[in-house]
Image (cartoon, rainbow, N blue to C red; front, side, top):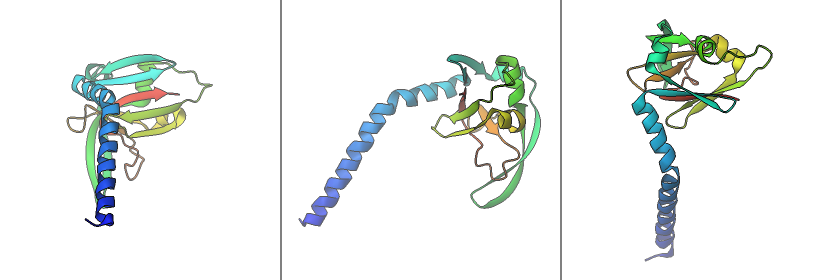
Length: 160
């Protein structure tokens, strides 16, 4: 065998071992996120306190139809109607915030994707939608023209 072939095989083997090690190290976090999705829970974290919200909790806030244009992948936009609750209504119901503090709000998904924004923006622009596909909860930002910061499979909201 040529030295270059042996080198390529060694590199592939090293990468395979690295992937296996990283997978093993993250196994518990993966299982926790899958359980959140199976239970239909959304964890809202503020000042070390965790509030567990369920689909029933969001439904109790009376989701309203929200029309948005879903764009992505270079395709033309598609008009979609979601049933959603403004983020500010969720905050008012579960964690009344002080007006003189502007937290950073981190919205995170089961797959590790996350988006952050100032509390002032989240209170004005963010909606939490109930979805039959792509997880029970989804962050919708109707003004985000390319849906880049929309979070599918939403499992956590953290105020920092």
